[in-house]
Image (tube, rainbow, N blue to C red; front, side, top):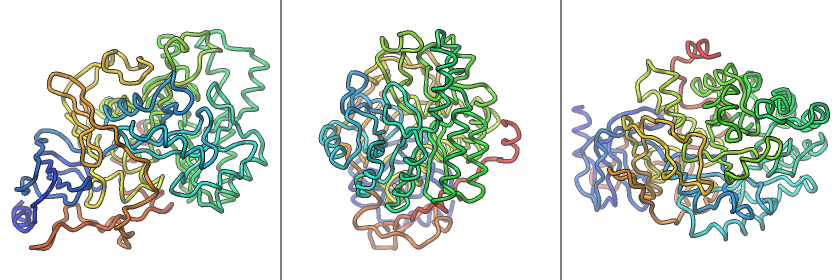
Length: 526
């Protein structure tokens, strides 16, 4: 502490736009009391507690945690063409009220985002109406698979392919030749690939045999784990052959987790996402929740849920996403074979994950749980999708994307607080502990929950993120592990802006967050 006090006297704190003081900061390295100095939308200094003396605005975070703004790398904001289900304005309000400052939107819209022109058209619709910063995953056109190579990195550095269809995803890669072409083009263009990995031919065969499901309890039998297992096995072999970085979204079964973790342990550049709905619900909830948890992939058994939790806790899962895919409630009330899969989830993402961890790890303190949340909701997505250096961490040089979190406040998600256009949630009536009080995006408050519970929103000036780093930044040649947690400026100079760290597939596989008691927890939850 004496060392920190001495350091405080050496730091030039003049002319900060904002200082957040008194809080406990969750960095990618540790959790500790610290102040944050912010200027021009960026973090310019991580300071010893109460060392900043001059700023245009001070924000008191005493008794609260300050986390990096979260990145929901899997949303369907339904723009363009499906705005009866969701609008970007409503989706981004839902996101910031849950601590999300950046989203990555999926391509299965109307029209799908198959070309750079589609991306620019989409951006034109969104511009001026987003509370969050955003990027797009490109779509893969089955009629022109190689067309995905036309995207410049600043337009899209990732592409999503569907291996089976559902109500809002008809563009499916059904044959091996198309997949091979996708991997070849991606290897040439350095594209990251995302997959909805379920085998369409298996599902079609079962539909012909079973007929259509008449009860929600029958749905999983029509979309069983075997479809996912076969699809994932095939993708692992393609990754092995081509060396392309692949990310399997919404993994739902213990077998998938085991295969993907084994492949990553061999050094293959393959990672995976778990969603909060697969962490929150099991097949036992199907009759109670009905259409609200009719999802693709299907909700599975408790043993699968336990394995998914172990993957999140132990660092096997790279990201946790919401797969925010809302539908009007009247659509979800159709017969089981007609009701579309999907649910809203970006508003609930962080709160559901944190509360699930509290239940799973009652012996661990809040700081341990928030480190896990930060790893899979901030650092992991930033690493995977090329945003490290700008997003995903609290460090000098990064965007001032921050969340003020009260860990003890108890509250219930009710209809009036739901921000998605669809107006419903599978978590309605749930009692949560811990609440996002404020969300800051690039130094501006975009969401605030008042002491009276009122939800206030800021200016919808979120931007389409260019790939990579600030124009005046250069990649660091220093290993992340050598970074100091608190940076100081030389006496008499302005704050030191750290060069952002680089991100490689090797770094992705060797994540900077160690698991918490990993071996013991792996045994406990598998």
